[in-house]
Length: 329
Image (tube, rainbow, N blue to C red; front, top):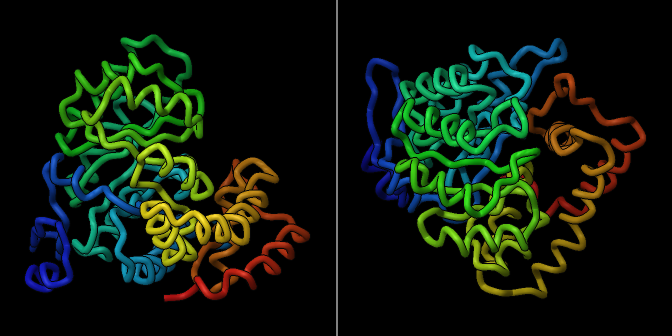
């Protein structure tokens, strides 16, 4: 297995774990940072009609996804409905993902809510073999700066793995706070923007410099904007259905090929994101419906998200025809 990975260009330090029965991609924080270049995929979490986990469906989706040269896979996270999972379900998803990926790319996992839960889930995931942690904001909004630093530091200290912070929802820190977090948390290696405020992101990057690796995390539709300011890594939910398109967007934006990039944005990406913007939570609901339509396993969403309306599902079906060249393996 290790030789096979080397032949295929894997950058993972493969660790065979006989007691668990699978291999894992084990990395020091500095090595994980180097690997985070290109497209990071955020798989959906399939549920059955009774809203129980569909782990067989998840494994099927992952087998299709790992055929492509991704930078990393994050499971579960926002697109994976992390907010709706119990700690036990979270663990099952991580285990299934690490087993299926088997060291081909780093697997990261999302954690959050509060320090005890985040730290416990992070430790469990580390024991299973994840390569890094994606830290969501705490549930309590608008807290003091000292409390935020303590929150993220507690998560980082729980495992020592490379950690990424995800700036989203109410957590939109100043450049000074990002700098402080970078100074006080040695294994903080990257920042994932979820605000889509390019002006503010530039100010943060100018303040902190290359201490952190910078990731465009607000959506595939923001690739032209992110890459125009020098970012070369982005997180893709489109990778759930068309990883070849996600990788092509990265290639075109990296090379400055604006004509084809603009065409793909106008014909495919922007219309999809317009549909996703119709209702709150549709960024997940639309992707899961699209997965079902093309033969992958999406399933329903869990509350508080809602499934697509029938009339909007018809719009999605018509949209998929334009996507056909990019679908499949």
